[in-house]
Amino acid sequence: MVASAAVAAAVVRAAAFPVSRQTMSHDPQYPPPGPDTAQPATEWPLEPNSVEMRAAIDAVAARIVDHVASLPDQPACGNADTEDVARAVRRARESVPTTGSDLEELLDYLFSEAVPRSFNTAGPGYLAYIPGGGLFDSALAAWIADSVNRYVGVFAAAPVLAQLEANVVAWFADIIGYPSAARGILTSGGSLANFTGIVTARRERLPENFLDGVIYVSDQAHHSVSRAASLAGFPSSAVRVLPSDGKFRLDVDALVKAVGEDRAAGRRPFLIVGSAGTTNSGAIDPLVALADVAAAEDLWFHVDGAYGGFFAMTARGREALVGMERADSVVLDPHKSLFLPYGVGCLLVRDGGALHRTHTVRAEYMPPMQDDADMVDFCEISPELSRGFRGLKVWLPMKRHGLEAFRDSLDEKLDLIEWATAQLESMPEVEIVAAPQVTVVAWRWTPAMVESADLDELNRDLMKRINLRNHVYLTSTRLDGKFVIRICVLSFRTHGDRMEAALADIRNSMAEMAAELAGSAS
Picture 1 (cartoon, helix red, strand yellow):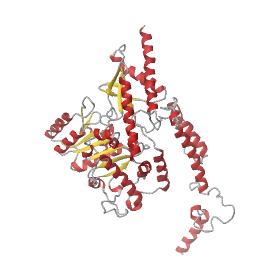
Picture 2: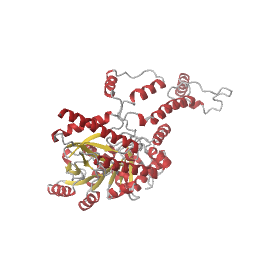
Picture 3: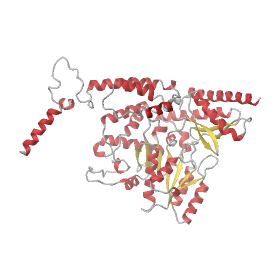
Picture 4: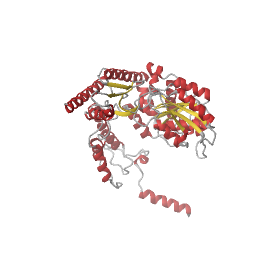
């Protein structure tokens, strides 16, 4: 009786819920033979048929191609009414939609209203912060990865795909000069990579009661390091911020002194964080000296190379980054200096076993993990269990274009920042506050007719005027207590013509302001 009831219930469910087109397609008689094989609209809106998928792909592709092709002509920092429109969207916050909308209408809204009202981070004029690239081939890879939707966190679930991602990590290890025993993970970005690096260092260098551990950073280190320390359970007092030198690099003498003081006070120094290209000025800490201190004091040496690390592919970058290969862990951001779309960071660890010791936790429902040291289960060496197939976003463009294409583009950025700096130096009353160590220059205008106390406000006005011309977008920071304007050249779409436009806007904005100053003084 029970079995009969179950069968009857199954029949009722089958009648109420028609078999999906995907299931029916296994039947050799479906679709039925005949001259008209066009597929009708699917009965299941979440399962489009091949005709519907192609139509949707064509519609989206048309918008994307037009958008990417027009990037050089788009405003560098978005439409002027961006914040007002965002507030209006918030005020008119819609309820959860109960019925579907037309795809073309949704695409109209995204590409005509929403996308243009943002920083043009993928455009050639974005010289702000640390630019993200947006390689088209990487976008194709993301589409493939999301469409096939394979799980690579466990090797057994997709062995070939997991190995492709492991190969990508191995490429990165080769680029920075790590040994074959190194392992690493792809993350959402440098912040999560720094967090994972600090947790790994904590596990390797400190006991379970780790609250008296000390982390040493410079006053130019990225703020994600302090945040990562907090998330890793350390009190704010555990992060000891040390002064930087005249080139905004960590002061090694101050580091040695601080380590000695902390040991004498009964604390546990365990981690030095060096920067391979700071956000403020692009400064590269004295990596060889920091590696020497770490070795002498038995400290973990972590290098944040999120911005500058991939310049090791170039001859100039390799020379500037000597010592990075001695670090215990290194952070890289492919979505910065490898030009990928946002969402791909990397942590490399010299001793791959340290990642295993930090992250391995077994569960009964999981498949067996790999015993072969050459095969990797990413869930065993990272904080993430559920994760996307990030590796394809690197693998596809690297395989399609080869390392030389990326190296040449990075070399071009080094050339462009050298040229821009020389142009700034040739301008009267321009002060170079931080000369390029990678591809950032920090500078300010110091006209004699303006009091020193007013220079910050003057340069704020100057930067605003440059940006309002909308050919380039620049940002600022503070160095030595001064408001300075930054130029960061990193986009693979930025070439000589855009840099010439940037310098023309700088000159014209200065001339405009100088005329106003002269007029007000007369």
